[in-house]
Length: 306
Length: 306
Image (cartoon, rainbow over all chains, first blue to last red; front, side, top):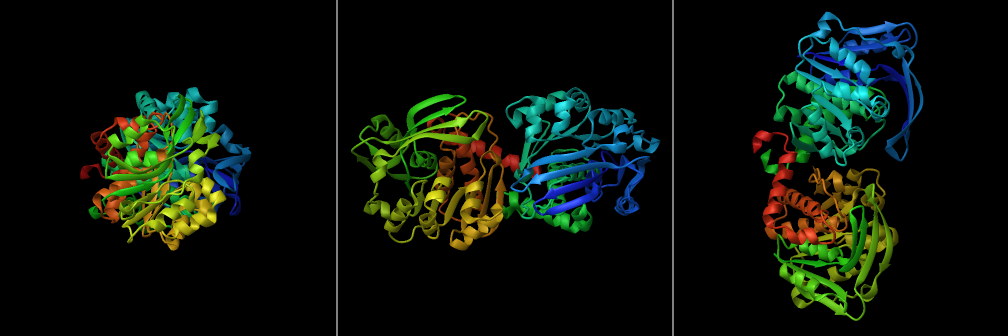
């Protein structure tokens, strides 16, 4: 099946203990799309400015991402500047955000994009996510949504409205407790199920993932990464891997959802090993499968099974 | 096989958001022994004061723990008073520590205890741990050692000396990085293997456990606990479950070590559900097996397997 992905496309300036990456390709839709493109045909919807480099447009197309939904507007591309704590990748400061052309983004889906069977609403303003969802024709097989603490803090009502209409919610362990006002991630998952989504994916970074599929829990450690260079885009790449895998198998059941979490974790582990999307565009499906296999072996109680 | 356990026996005063527990039975050897007793014959070695209650002595014996190695010395039993942050169980303040009879503890193993095949050196001064280890006759099948940040900070040399002579090292993710001065837990595990231990168990609390057995990694989420009342003794109960299970099967291989991690995690999840050892003495082996089964199901990629 085809996976339609909406989100931000940005030029990021990122500082980590490994160095500085200036005005490099980033944004939730970029990471999601590149990650998902290893599994499934992908169409991207987003806006860039007139400064968006031909190289970067080409890069998406070389990775077989359909960019006909990529709007080029007058002005500059969205810019983000962040700095990660050298001692703790979970802490970061946003030094500068310039929405630029993104401020007036009002996505209009093409007739073809409206009929996509899989839809991923990447991390952007929930009002835009809802706007896109409401343009879909027929009912998509699966709609995923990723978000972040900023939207929970500032747009909780809008976020709740769109969460009620989706199938898969991605949040981290802090976000979901804040969003649901529950004490444990397990209670939070049940709360979200009651709102509508049948799949709740709780991202825990280096500690792995907990997911609840129709109330059945699955928990998985993270792929053991020794070399984190830049965590930007890890969550987006995770979401892209999850949705891309499910779109590729076109089956939503206990097995496929768990496999999807495995591939998602692998894609997150790849994204963090270099700045921007560099590592994501270097690797191939063999490397992904090899990491999936390592992750699987890491988790089996009885090593005789395989 | 029989598991010999040495460690502290204490009366703990603990404050958590759930309330206050005053002068209740605690200590590393107590939690370890009660936890291990579900799996294996256990002999405890430790010291208590003349104030040690008959009820508490009886409690150990009722749970079939051999207490002939329990020394009763003049003076008071070891006291610890701690308070946990109401918002974060990973943060605690020690308000008072009184070593009392423990200050002069000089364990002398009986002839029978010296021949135990499994030995667990619970969390106490590494000098005492080494003292006990050197009294063992023949070579035990497996020696485990648990410790804490306090000993890494104050007795690192002694700790290194005893770690070189053991088989299983238990530490949490922060401790092992501090102990080895490595950046990742994976590098830290290799560092410890190079020192001698063939099994490195990295406890991550609510995030589960990572273990390295002869360089092969295994990672497991925590049992999903919704009701944490008092985390005191979770690590000791974890270690007791791990060593008790291996002692019961008397086989150290990839399968048994992973099973041991599962039972260890279950025992930790039980210990935290009430103050002191209350929950540990309430449950039975059926409840343990049921939790093990839930934990196993939580981790399998392919739910068709079972």
